[in-house]
Image 1 (tube, rainbow, N blue to C red):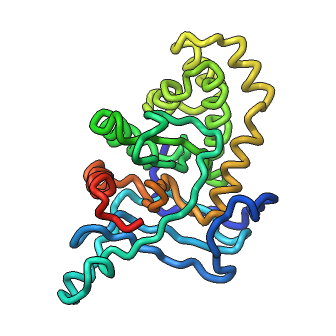
Image 2: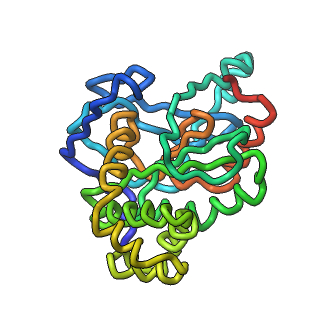
Length: 265
């Protein structure tokens, strides 16, 4: 699977028949607005392009490096701490998607991801487990699907297979195998992974063949696109947007500051 750091999807229509019930912030219909989110001097946690009209560029793989603009403290030492940390949080529902971590965790990370995205794979292999190990009581992660269909033809069926594994309480074990790099994404290997995890393969195959979760995966995709998500992986940490396979230290810094109450609500 080749890494293409700037692939994009053109001319895919995203619609949301329930948009008035789920979209909680205003979006421009003409331009994308860059929202930098900076919490420490010299470090930005990434960026997200909001508000492109449906039918224009929809998504791209996010490159793993973060932007590093100067902070206001560097450019103007007299700027107040509140002005330095001006942030905006977004109300992103968890829906009924898979989650791991305590229900009462102080921090919820909602991830929009793609099983065929190499940057998503990198993040899951290098960062995901470390967060859960270091913050077992404080962090909960919710997984929502955002398959980049035009450039990743296997991402949607892989997402459906993972949802079938969820029926047998094996979503996270199954997704770990999808992200492991051991398997090419194919119907044969989806069944092979299920068998290796000792799932009921007959029930799994029936679920997958029936397309039972096609609407669920598509609903996540449509919601994310209308929300303004353009890249994978994209995260919302207590509503704070983070784009790209950012390293563990970026998430650790934001988690620690959020737990300490240092980030404005």
